[in-house]
Image 1 (spheres, rainbow, N blue to C red):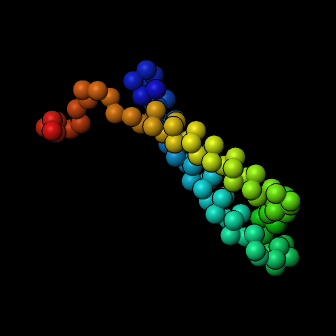
Image 2 (image 1 turned 135 degrees about the horizontal axis):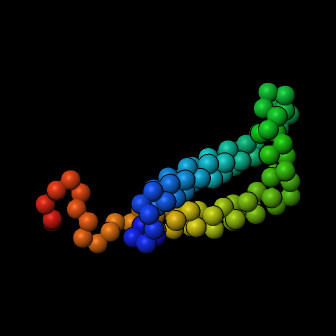
Length: 98
């Protein structure tokens, strides 16, 4: 991707995927960390977290989320690799070739 499209598109695809990856990983940590916590403790103070955990922690929802998240991470990391891969023969700031 980085050698076949305009550099601006590769740049935004790279940083968009990195941003998305941070949200996927942060969401996973939050949902796994909140599983043993009584939802009623944060129902009033954090209503969005309450609704998300209520949906995700029903039945085998957390296991299904974690499995789907693995496929999402593979796709996002693949996008990062394709967007930010080095170009053959590229020179950066006139550094010597090693």
